[in-house]
Image (cartoon, rainbow, N blue to C red):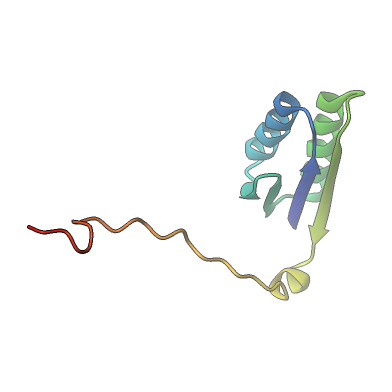
Length: 95
């Protein structure tokens, strides 16, 4: 089942550890603090248990949203790749 994991964690080191956990489960980063991917319900629970253990008593807000295929297909996106800089001589330069 597809799921989205988002988090707000003020501590840099802890935030990086939670991102590593998400990557370990094969999730793809879609924003700095958001991941998406396919996880079986048992793996969703396992991931969140690892996150809870890593967070301990520190400040964190980590949420996992399971999405059925029908809801995933209804998503609306606007994805635009970053344009690469053009190479060559600057305009108006004499050669």
